[in-house]
Image 1 (cartoon, rainbow, N blue to C red):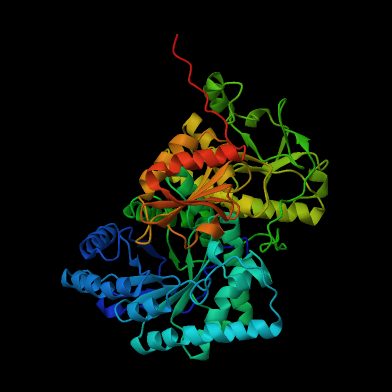
Image 2: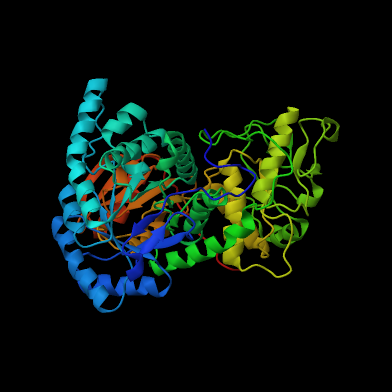
Length: 596
């Protein structure tokens, strides 16, 4: 199976058109030859009509093309009518999507008023209990029959009213049935979505798109690749559009880096018809990142014909770090083999940051580019066995090669594979410097897409960031990319949802409060979830979880297991700290020395 035409040449995946609303009256066409559509989500209570209208208008003003609103109950779904009526009265024609979890009745009500309904196959007809059960083939078929019975009325209504549907699978909320048969895997996510798609097709309903979201960019990338390949295998009329997003990406640089890795990698391979950057920030900021990211893709995706005819350079459906021998990188660090991915800087950067590095600092240069025993190759030319003396030579792409970094490094790996060479690789975020200095936010996105995409391919033993001109910022960016890609943990890792009408506390305020108490806990992963929808599942690989359980009440988790319930919000952060201490993950923060 293949998920794209070529890993070396950009070719946008051919998808059928899906209409969200009436294009003649402000609706949007996604897929086909239409540009990638930007969308976001409201963060307020759906029953607050005035605030929903206000937030929608603010999103539209910055270029949002589809707005999603949660509808957790039938009452909320019914109020979508008032929101839409008020928006249309103000001349705002943006399509509205109702976000549905658990409540088929809410979906049926919402379909009366909005242009699209999003359902989550993991909980539309199932309540997740984390139950372990063996399903015989007969049991499984019976469960599918039950799901079809619950889902078919919505399909028929959407078809009758000319509405659109998003089948949105989440890594954090797969059903117990899927989990028990497929596990917490990309295959399970894809199968979960395809089950619902088959019901749609059974009733000749095709106005839908898919999404495969995870807070882990590598998992998210694998899921979309597998889905695209499976749809292609199913047949030419299974070419439904794809909505891309890294869910619970967090805030600030970390949220932007995670989103750039996941979304950017797939866009460069030609996948994606709509996108959302999920940030724990005010929603309009998501659209700014969408705009910036989309603007970079033509510069980062290869539009030239590949010069060499080579095999696929990695397994796109199962992450595995490319095996290499261990080599000396510098006097203090090795790379390759079982070593962590290392950070290299230029001599100029080293000279600026070295005087500020303290012995215990985790963020520090581990090699100087100009001092490396490094072989630089041009992968657009045929590489011969005599060009490489041995496998213990660190290799990179030569500066000045006229290809985007992702394509150039994939070509390099393919040529090395062809020769049977396993040399460790130094990744670069850019192969040529632009005449003008990049804005920090653009340098961040480009480096995250280029290096993060390759790390998600399993390629890379050391990395070099040069597109960011600030010495300290470039060093920090390199480490942040490694953390976001799951290659290295040098600080506390946060999985934070972006907030919506289901959220039971102020996510931005609480996230800041939790960070203030825990950001010194190197290697600890904390999930901050506004509600229960994706909480336990997305916390499966987190150490601790802080989840809204009821208004003003917080539940605390260890992994995906709830430990403490209904803690008053005013006490919850300190109780989280107590829980971390109970599990021996706490260390006291260092007290800054007073100036002499």
